[in-house]
Picture (cartoon, rainbow, N blue to C red):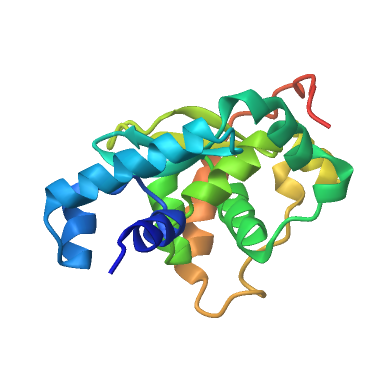
Length: 196
């Protein structure tokens, strides 16, 4: 069996950098064999001028876009042609809007799925922003931006509809949101938004 195609497929589906030993265990081959093949795949993408690269990062391997096309990717993600958000992005954005500031881990636990890619998309589109670290966990938290309010057509987060009629058994979440709203400082002046 040629392991190259299997490695490419596994890494394409991975949401985090994946260690060579984990890939080797999944394929039931020696780690050294996987490391050699990963280096070969990385050389192929580098040498053929492809739009993606295979990179060793954070103790593992993952696909990434070629830095030379970053301007094109950013423009494509924020262009009007790509303005529709996926269902996953809408759900993630809703959780952030109602629980902000909220960590990525908390959003993932509410949604029950990994939200890393969706959070990146929402950041690039200017709908959310990093909002400091959680005092307890140290994790980065996220909040919505003035562009979010603009796109939604509201002046303040206080204009968001109540969740209780929309979700069954939402009493606990409503209580938490009430506490957050009570602790929320007066609306600060809207920041100038340069995202479109």
